[in-house]
Image 1 (cartoon, rainbow, N blue to C red):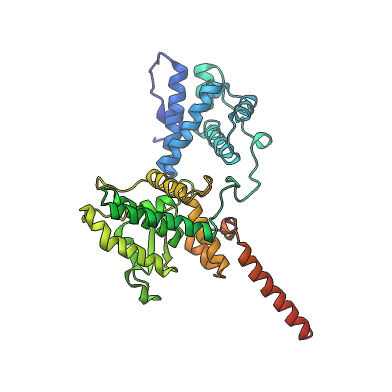
Image 2 (image 1 turned 90 degrees about the horizontal axis):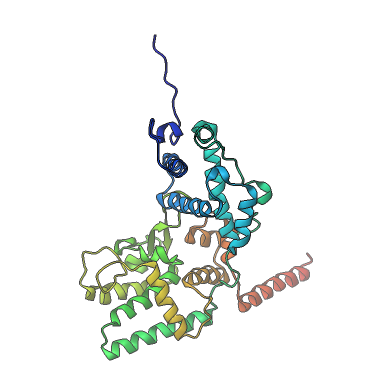
Length: 366
């Protein structure tokens, strides 16, 4: 007679632990096996490696504070977060990682509770619950000082960048290529509303014609292949239509007149370093800070402020909000709304337009 062998869940203790082995440090070995099983379980759910590694780092950090998972208590969790001094969004992220880990080890399908009772005489429990978790109360939990640049600030930033390019070219210094590259890069970030990593990962072939705008040539659309991913998912792609012709002229000039001087024609990246590699997001941050100082702008402004500016300025120019949402790749209109800060001039135009409609309605008897 044949008996069906019970199927074991991916990441279960029975599949991770080595039968018959007696480790010198049973607690440490048991914790390591838990993390290995958790990794297997998450990989089976097709979660990204970066997400899994980030969660594991958080669990290990809390273990340094609270001991082994079967020793953790709600009071320890609350004390750790009370002393951390982290931003609200960071606290929610850390709490979420701990809650997911404990949900895994406490799930009877994976057998860790029984293994802990047998090996160390204690059992893990879920210590993250509704009463001690940070609440998601707003769509945007970033720092309030982060904002878009006003049109005047944006012009000052680009003027400072262009002035730096002109002075570098006139002096025939070695770094003029990088200076021209950086000025062009930030105009592209603003001109297509890109995130810094999206800009860094652009390849030359990512610019293409748009049948709806033949006058823009091969720069009618920018294909973003490394858009911000949903948690645990691969990067999201989107096609961003060119709405600022001057931005198309900027990238065309850079690709045709400047990039060839790097001598890396076979490299796919748009933005190259002096050593022939792809520029990194960290380098983009550093270059932005340099131009920001030259333009005497507030230190709170970041590369991402250019993306905020793109959204706000399109809305000020009465571009359809749904079109703007699709351009920047937001799943929800509420997210795009968070990016939007309408300037005083635009508010005044909208106010006058609203009053004109109201007075015209009164005159027409409505």
